[in-house]
Image (cartoon, rainbow over all chains, first blue to last red; front, side, top):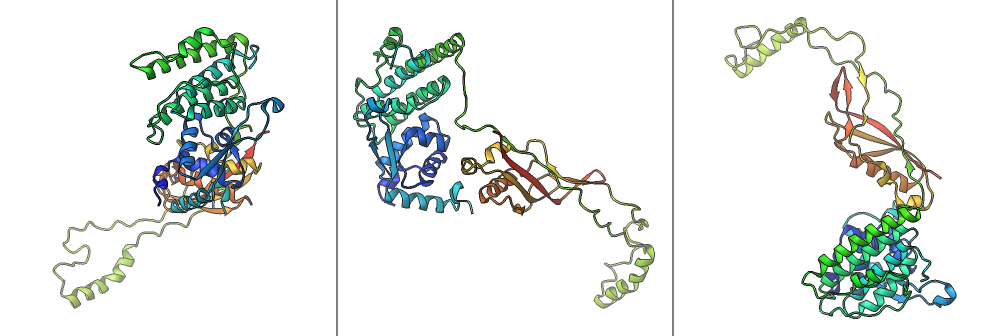
Length: 104
Length: 302
């Protein structure tokens, strides 16, 4: 495991976050979307997102919209990196279980 | 944000701005904008307030994280979605004060704000819609299978005549191994109590099948979220084997699949979690180990 991996503490909530992204690996999700999919509270979610982003598992960017045209603020969108996708798969393999949406 | 927004929304916005303002270093501005955008996506006054309080907690967690602890927090005016209608008193309360116990002050302010929001909700008649899940509660019913066939009758105890048949064999064993002193046929001066003839039980044994018992886990938590999103419903029959104390003695197996691997997995997880909370089968009132199927139905209530 690299140095960055040591910063990712695997908790049940972190697994839920990874599961939310693994449902559609190429999809970009806002924090509110991840909270809804993973049934997580905001107090738990955002520290995990920042931790995964600093470890290189996620990358984020601002939504490319004009808030005045859209009628709402622009959101911060997160996406799994190739490293994050690979490491998330290894984590679930370590726990000897597939994410719930991949049940055979 | 317009002054016509509900009080709860303005309180939530003020809480989020305050939390972001005290986030470490360069995160403050980003988190402020990000959290306000996600706050706008929350439906209902209760969700907004819960989200805002969560951001206050998240700010403290992030500030304590060694990754960000080096960067000092600085107050950054979050211009996005300014709330000109926010109560001035609340703004003043949320301003950083030179207090040796900032956490206590923040918690006190958050508690006061929550009480104000709840009172306002009663005054203005805000409807609270709880839960993140959009769909209604699941309906899960346990349908025990039909009572199984009568179990085989217990083997009757040997009669005195049967024992008499074997007595010569016992004697042969004794003679062969010269253990006559230690092995005495029954009834010849030993401490073994005389054998009482046991009559086999007449008629069938009263048997009550097992099933889920008191304390069985709530099934709602085992309805897989992926199945809910795919709007899958169905019934699964799971075969379980439990001992006299209602504990699983083996891995549950699928007896009849629902057709959905997700629902089957949820039913198996529920069956495993119920170990220790099954009602064991009984024979003439005595608990016995047995195997039986439980039927779990997952259904979405529209």
